[in-house]
Structures are given as C-alpha cells and as structure tokens.
Image (tube, rainbow, N blue to C red):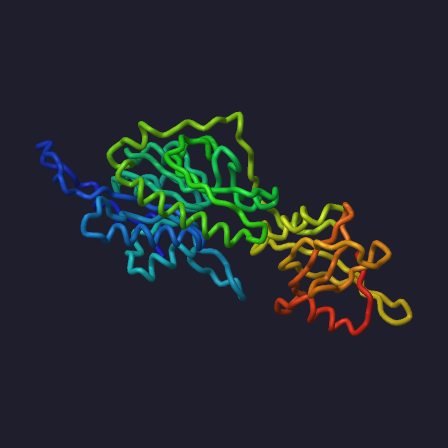
Length: 357
C-alpha cells in the first residue's frame, strides 16, 4: 500500500488558463473518509453506496487510515480493516493514505493537492491538527458513538457500559482541536439493554451514525448544517479515557452489577480476567487464571458457602461479591482454550472445590 505518493500532484493543475471560469454546476464534491477499525469500514461501505447513486452529490476522493499493523497469529503486517475493505471494493490503492501522524508535512502537501471539500471521520484513531482541519472548506465531520458532551474521548462506548448507562446514542459533530468538543449537527438516542456488550453496541451506534451522516449530507454541502449546529455545553462534559490491559482484572470486593457492567464494557478487548483457586484432595490447591466472557446478576440469595466459595447453580458459576451480591459467570475461557460454558468447566473439576483467590 502506498501512502503520500507523488501521484497526487496531478490534482494541482486547475484553472491554469487564468480565466476564472466557474466549475460545472453538476460537479460532485470531493469527500475524504478517515477511519480504521471494522466499525468504520461499515460507514465507508455506506459512503461507497451513496456515492454510486445516480443523483449523488459527492465522490470519494481519498481514504485516510492507520498504517498496517501486526495482527492475528505471526503478527503479520496487515492493512487496517478500512483499508482492506477499500481494496476489496476496488478503490485505487494510491488514493489510500496511511500516515503515521496526520500532521506530517509530506502527507498534508499531498492531501492539499487533492482539493478535498469535506472530510468524514469515524474511529480514525489519530489526532487531526489545525493544519489539516483548515484544508477542506466544508469542514471535518465526525461520527462519535455517544450523546455528546457525554463521554468525550477514545472509549465512549466502553466507559458508558462500565458506568451502567441505560441510554446511549451517536452524535454527528464538527471536528475542532478540543477533544470531541465541536458543534453538534445531529444525534440519535438508543436504549441500552443490560445484556448488550461493547462490540454489539459499537456496531449499532455506527450503523445509526451512518444513517445520520447520509441524511445530513445535503445540509453539510449547502452550509445549513454549519449554521444550525448547536454548541456543546462544556459544563456537562464527561471523559472516556482509553482502556488499558491492566484494567481487565475483576475485583470481587465490588458489587456484582459493577463487575457485570465491566465484563460487558471490556468484551472484545481487553476482556476481563479473574484468578480462582482449585482445591482438590488433601487440600492441595492451585491458582487458575480465567477469562470471563459472559455474565449476569444472580436474582436469588441464600447460596450456601463460607463467603469465599464459588458454587454452581442454574447453569452458572456464582461468584460472591460485595453487597452481598452474586455474579453469574455463564461463559469463560481458559488460557489457550476455546470459550466454554460454566457447566462444562464445573463438570471438568470432578468434585474439586472452587474459591476466590
């Protein structure tokens, strides 16, 4: 894949005759899409489809995405999901930019030569400097999966689920230098079920965001969106900082609902982990690390145990938590193994006891 190549220089030769002639009225606007993960590829697909409609007002002029990275076994360098989708769609590879940073002068020079008129971002994952934001005359518009000004930052869906929200949404906003603080063009609300996990909610919100974007494109092009966009109330802003792998451990001195919300929030990456103690014959014991996949909150009380025992009931492992409360672990994964049900894991213990570490 080529990034920032000299091929873009050909777009510089416009109005060379000095006549100042106006462009044709049916000239399509040049739209540039910026995104990287799989959820952003779904937005790109909607833009591809919209751009191919007979009455489309825009064309996809370029795509900007993160550089290839090591994924899967062997850590082979692979294009981002957005780049891969674009390639599979037949999009010219020399129009796919993969700068390390969006502020690189070589990238900005080639980007300017495209004469982009509007930029759309969806989970791009790179800071856009003022030099970039000043290039497209219709601005840069971002699909952000939260009801801004709530959950500004890198992990809005994960932090919202971790907080146990019952309502979320997606916002279409103009990008400014301050973090997710631009004027709001439109938004869509959605109820959040207590069983939904982060990857599912992310997909839902970016699908809704795609609908919003396609609906608002005419107003973005005629300037009415910028006139009608509403400033955010910064006093109500909350932050959604990036998640780290160190946060994945479950601490059972918290209430079961808090742990259930964390499992939902961290599903996919980095997941949630716990250590349990297996006690066999003659009180021999060993500590086992498990990845907790699917959970619920136990609705019944009165399970026998010494307060530290993990028992099996109703198809789930019941972990004692603060409150007192019980976390139902319905699916788990052992190191190097496939995801299994709690019942299969319990049967594999063959009568050995299970306790919190």
